[in-house]
Image 1 (tube, rainbow, N blue to C red):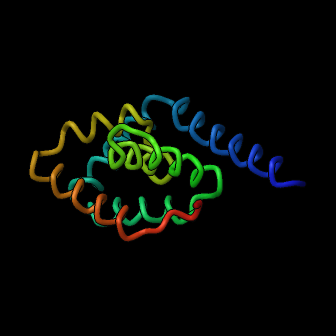
Image 2: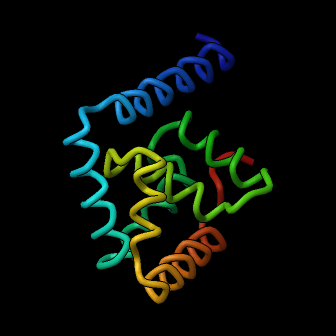
Length: 128
């Protein structure tokens, strides 16, 4: 398998993972949203740590490539990375992660954002 085939396989693997999360039964997605809300509010350090894992390649090459595209893009990088981690670690769809975020108190949102931004600065992306 050459490098291009490997990258295509990894991108497909990530797409399947994200589709499984999005297509899970509603009860599972709601439970994942609850768990994500708790993680963001009660243990934001863990959520930020997982963003670091995403950036360093621990979730696989496809996820790392997506993180790299997020980092190279324009939008709200911490939010996009947390949404991706939510899907990969907590099996929480992106829109449910946004709902969980919106349910947090402002102080919890600020704390999580600072921790994620610090993790982004500390962690060197595995893809140059």
